[in-house]
Image 1: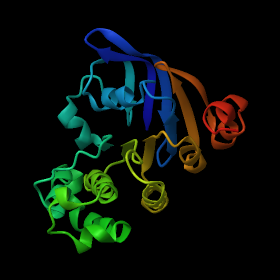
Image 2: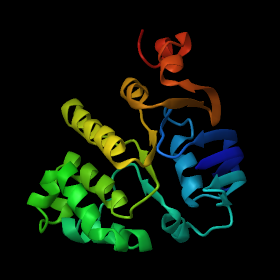
Image 3: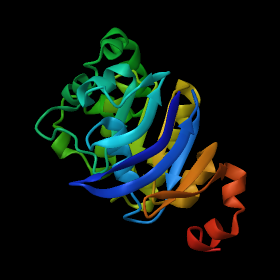
Amino acid sequence: MLSIDSLRAGYGGIPVLHDIALTVGAGEFVAIVGPNGAGKTTLFKALSGIVPATGTITFDGASLLDVPPARRAHLGIAHVPEGRQVFPSLTIRENLEMGATTAAGRKAWADNLEKIHAWFPVLAQRATALAGSLSGGQQQMLAIARGLASAPKLLMLDEPSMGLSPAVADEVFERIVAIHAQGGLAVLLVEQRVAEALQFAHRGYVLEAGRVVLSGTHAQLMNDDRVRQAYLGM
């Protein structure tokens, strides 16, 4: 579904990513882990077209590099950014409607809304509440749900546990795993909580200083001495 090769990206001519190569298959759960400043968020911004990039980005067999950022969501890519970035002055329902502006999202609105409410009951209970009145965990759930409202083929989640207590982060992870299992869509996850990210992923990539330094299956990475020592505290 998603194939990246020789990808380079950065800001103001300063490179951040160097020759990145990775793939995400249809329905696959792939995690990208690494330290702060490794380029994980820049990678997502390159995929969304927010930062300029060179190399190859192919989605569903078509090149993304010439596709405007606003158009990429219509191809089936949902980017849930770090920091949640909900619309605080809009209601929960209005935030979800903002996510459902793609053709696929409009067509599947009723069905998607029912699924979203099943995954995140609080969003149904507080549908008319302003998004800014929600707790951090509830805002993260809303941000994920807004991405799902577009009826994507690929859901990109950037640091969904950021700023959340361990208990709330665990709850958010549980919902992500359920969405992947029940929805059948591909998930590309960037996450600081390495143990949780690799536990649920089929495959993973370790990004350091803008380069992929390790990749493998869930089992391969969990058993790699470098990953165990640097990221799992073992």
